Structures are given as structure tokens and as C-alpha cells.
Image 1 (cartoon, rainbow, N blue to C red):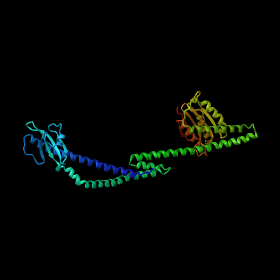
Image 2: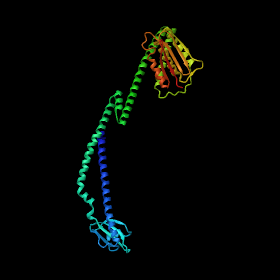
Image 3: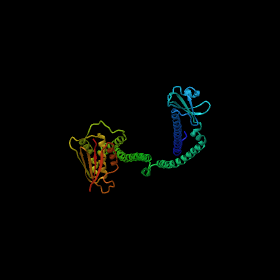
Image 4: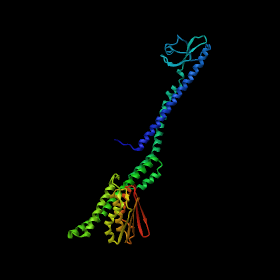
Length: 396
């Protein structure tokens, strides 16, 4: 399929529109001239016909009076069922073009008044002599339409070319949004905005994919290494309780990482799972992370009202809480790590670590943020003078 440039298409449309408009106005002008010419002839015919009714004997040049039966056959054929005052125009077989008026004189006798207007058709005569000028005007108009079309459409085509080139620049949405702000044509501005939004969405998706890979590399490397070390220790001593606990923690961390990825990749977050008991979940996490916290001179304090249940699936809340605790232990300083639960969500408070560069939390917090957003909740930070607090609000 042969493709045309926007400038050529719009220019042709403008030229066609201009020529068509001129042809339409020319046809209207000609029709108006013919109507006016007929009106003048008919008015002259009626004035002379009135003098005939009043008994005039001499008629002006070009007028002929006939009785109702002695008129030429062509005239009689046109007035077979005539009534006084009717006017017909026709061309006679021998060539003259006439207007005919049917009338009745004061004696009650019908007559036909024939007016030969062959020499008074000024519009036809003007057309016969002026059609070359009309063609010249039409050609000049076409040329003017071509020049104006290319001038007006050229600006539009340049804006379209600029927009197409801007759309072809990958990854730079700043210039695209600036172009949208400066663009005076609303449709082009909207197209630029939509394209910038599409680029941002694509870049966001790529960034999320990069973060997912970074999370996997970070979250899976440590538990896999811990599991390998623990298995080596258990192979030497099957009764090594510390190695068994490390292997169990590594296994739990791998499970949570896989659950987090699965939940993030799902199309829908709807779940028919029952509510999650807060005290049971926090007690299990306390038992799991207490030895690791103790090795870093930390202690876990979990506060959950009896009977409190959260609306999200247990594996999601467990993944969120476990990541917050792991980050608090790994990136926090010595002291008490508080976990407070209420009907709206939970909060984790851990002291600063003197050598921490992550203000109390690390990469696992990114995973928590994405999971919370996936389920429609909210996550907030509160930096105290000596501690960091992270609050997670659940959406019911």
C-alpha cells in the first residue's frame, strides 16, 4: 500500500475544498442571474399583456398577439389547458426562444401573447464569451488554494513531524511533556501526554522488574548460603540444634520470598482466605526470629490484643511482618524491637544502628511497600531521634 505524507493529504483536501467551494458559489451565481433575467422578462411580458387586455392595438417590437386557436402549433401544445395569467417559456421549432402569456381581453376573448426573447438572453451570451475568463479564474483560484494549503498545512505538518520525532526518542519523557505543554493544538498535546504516560508506565514496569531481580538476588542469596552451611553442619553432627534452627529460618525465608513474588505477579488480589489471627502469627514470628535478634543484642516485644484478626491472607501478612522484622534485626541497632498490632494494621519500631546506612531498614522494605500497594493499603515512615517506625495500614 502506497503511503502519503500528512502534508500532501491535507494539502489535496484543502485544494479540493477550495475548488469545490468556488464551483458551488459560481453555480449559485449563475442560477441567480438566470432567475433575475427570467423575472425581468416575465415582468415586461405582464406589463404588455395588461395593455392588450385594455384594448391596445399597437404592440412593442418583439411581441405578437394570437387568438386561442391561430397561434403556432408548438405554442398551442404548451397551452392546451391554460388559464389566464399563465406564462410558459419554450423554444419554437424554427429556432426562436419565446415567453408566452395566456390572457383574456375585456370582450372575454382568450389570447396568447408571444414575446421573442432570443436577443435578450444576456446571461447565455455572456457565458459564451466569458467562459475562458471563468476558466482562468478557476485556475488562479486553484493555484491560490494550493499555495495557501501548503502554507497553512506546512505549519501543521511541521508540528506533526516534531511530535513523531519526539515519540521516537526512547526513555526521555521530560522533553515529550514539555512538547505537550507548548503544543497549541489540543489533539497533538493530548497525544504527547498519552505517549509520555505510556513511556512512564513502561519505564516503571522495567524498574519494577529490576527491583524484583534485585530482591531475588538479595533475598535468596543469604538463605541459600545459610541453608548450605546448615546442611554441612548437620551432616557432621545430626544433633546440632543451632544448625537446624538456621536451616529452618532459611527455609522460611525462601518460602516467603516465593510467596511475595507470586502475589506480586498475580492479576488479581482477591482471596477467599479466612481472616488472619494477629497474636498467633506474631507469636510464630517471635519464636522464629528471637534467636537471630538475641545474637545481635536485640529483643522482640510483640503486642497484639487477644482475638484480633486482620483481613488479608495469612501468607501476605506473614511475608510483610517477617520482612519488617528481618530488616529491623539486620539494619537496626541493639535494643528492643517493638511490634504493635491493632485493627488497622501493625507497626515495627527499631533503634538506629550506629553504622547503618539505611536508616534502620534495607531492601526488604521495598518488597513490603509493593505488597502493601498491591492490596490497596498504605505504608509510612516515622523517623524518631533514636528509632525508626514503619506503619502498615490494611485496607478492609
